[in-house]
Image (tube, rainbow, N blue to C red):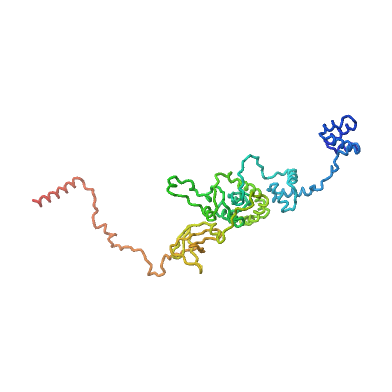
Length: 452
């Protein structure tokens, strides 16, 4: 029995038993035992009493050898391992996998327990942890809506080997995603749709912080000479800058990626999570992805957003009567002809006049609105007109009546232009010098005889 007890006891418990036994034998005092065991004298006295009554078993915890009530069964551990190794969850990092287990598989457990199960099975998290580097981060804005960081990043979001660009906007104060939109390439349409989602769901922000992409800033900006600036020359706004001015939003250009680090870190998180979410939801196309993102944004914000310093939001509601489609579009000026037709990049469009709309005068200058949402529309004197593609009718090359057919004129063979060159002997300058002198002499003598 004693050997069985010693086998169950740990090394620390064996040490305590040996020291307490020596106090019972009188070899050492209670004070000396307290110093050796790093305990108080009162604790040593309590342990002496227990060993004296129950032997070494008094030093063994009563729960030792028992399985905890909340222990994870071997079957559940194996199920978790199998799920992580499956094609759906294999690319999810440990933290994301913990959330997916609770949301989809209805398995709730702590991160430390999950980490122990997966690492014990030799599974490593696909998300690499960066070595911590001290960096002084810019302080967050105190109110939501004061500053929005915007950017786009290409990545294999759908897992089909093709890179698509995800356009995104994140609030600086809370870390909330306020807009996401996926397109084939980085484009103005992607940013306009990101802005549209933000305005309809959050409001109009105070300012937007972006990089120096040509969408946000003209390529000619900063290239004007001092002389040109003194002459009053300025760079035209991009279509994005023009739209933001109409909404009353200030645009700020970052000088480096580190300056807009919040949106850059967002990409790291989304690149780890979104492809897994798309795979679980069965997303295969860009249109399906954009529809899915509308429901994914609130779920993401519930997990990662933080409380702002001030509860009052700086977002402004969209003004009543302002047509957002007339702002988030490309605007250019054109002139219409007497048929209400205008040309735009090699294509022609005809203005459609409704019953309650006045006609547009000939040669009038109109504002052309181009959008992938509403198509091509025209604005004149504050009124919006729809348009349709127009193709001018082709003129027939040959008339149907043979009498009206005109053939090219051909002169007859007796015409001067065909035989006239043979009427005169061609003039040449092949006579010798002697012949020329004789001819001049005859002319001179003839004139002399007439004078005489």
